[in-house]
Image (cartoon, rainbow, N blue to C red; front, top):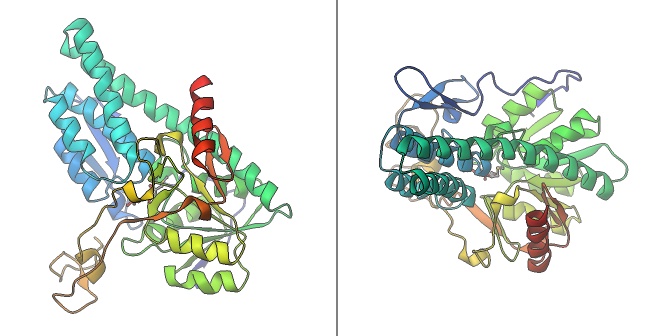
Length: 377
Ligand code: MRU
């Protein structure tokens, strides 16, 4: 079993390159991304000079994870404005780059609205571009703040649900600083527990087919010195059966008004397992992931990804032999079912933790009340 001993005290940033940053070299503004498709082998920067390059980076998952998609979308609008492109065309192509994470369109629309308002007010495209960038920067900063508050609320909830301490937490996909302006969502809670000496074990689902758990969460956990163990997704059942999981902590890409949670495919089976084994299933997400305009789980559009991601192992670290650019693991011509996300119904979710606090039990009324409280704050 892949395992790494905790190195208490070691607490580095998970990568030398931030997940996203805005730069203004003499040639003109650019958006610089840490190319997440290349992790963990190498930390490589991807420089976007226009929104179409960013759309490609979003589709290929070079930049990914709901909160970061929102931040990227906002910067993408700012980039289009600063470079003199058609802002509304760029905004439409950015927000449709991937359909499930609502944060993407939230971020795009926020920067677009700031741009539009400034243009109407001043008629000056330079001022409007500055305002779009200010909106992107504000979202970036707010996400970092939300991340810290979610970590505190999430740890308090874990301590309340599991009074003995020594938490053994199972997580899925990647929800750390690679998806956030701060330290992330679910992984930020586990990290807070680690820093307080209350994380006994982080169980990391590898997260097929694109291995966000193995490539990214294990990468972050190792850099933070967390005690973590990697498992194949289909080993989760026997881990629960062995009584080794105290809580499941995951993020979300969109939370519908009724509390249905769309997250990386494989989350729903974990919720079913958690319920059967009487283990809390906790979703950690910023308010930007709540979507009051999507009434329920059935209304959430789940992204369908290309079949080659399942029929081939796609990685920049392996030689290219298959049609999709990877190593084939199924006969040529095999069809694959490859939804990127699944939807967990609210009755299987123990709690949703946001920067404004936790909701439990998860109901439409409780979520509406939480959003109203956040607006008043
Ligand atoms: O396809 P991805 O890698 O963008 O999927 C990411 C996830 O499913 C995360 O769990 C989700 O965005 C929550 S991250 C805070």
